[in-house]
Image (cartoon, rainbow, N blue to C red; front, side, top):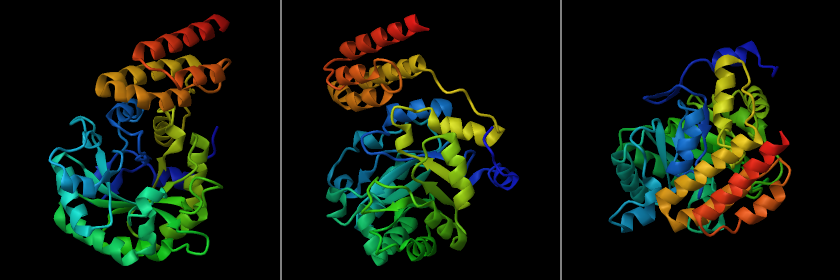
Length: 338
């Protein structure tokens, strides 16, 4: 039995309120570039029907210069609640992009102020906005004025250990009109190394009145509960823990709602999910989907006899049939060992 304090269970038993939007889950699926497309979100939502999902982050500059919306902005009318995440450093471009996102039925607009990747920060987007709080503030204000859905922000605790500025930054975002903030407990300099510093998320929670969502090192039900206890946050956002494991958001959500832990999927069940994921990517994106599927398939192929060899094979598949045959053979071999 996973220990959970009565205070935490009581606090998290009510819906999450993001401005005017009410979400019946305190567990969110993080936006992940190259991962959280329509296909992946459908798999996650199968196990977490009430959770907020996020698209991959969308460049407001690119949206400004194209006539057709990119495929990464496509949402299923049935997949609610859904948020479209945008990034840029231009308030006017982001306001325009937000209007297009709302037209695509986004329930909220999330602004990425945490991505650590150089190609994003060099152009003034992502976590570079932590060093430009006035620009970040202007962005939120302009986007809030441009649309009638709640605006949220996802960010990090600071640029580096010498510049941990999240307390002031988070206050500014709230004052500018953000209705929720998600804090990844690492600096930009950390990337994804070291441990997430949940204590900084706790400090943010103490000074804000809007919901604070904790992000970073959520790889299991146990880590989610520990994070919620440490931070006092209003919910958790799962990121890398869902790679090759779209069950995680649902597992945490189920535990928070029932106090019971679902049995973990078996290797065979995970591979069956991988096969479905592969086939769906092929149907949705064609050959490009197969190229994208290679990384997903290697994430699924872990934790069982023969997984390393299967990963090698799946990382170079050229066709959907090749991938399906490899997965079905692995499933048959595992079945023979049971």
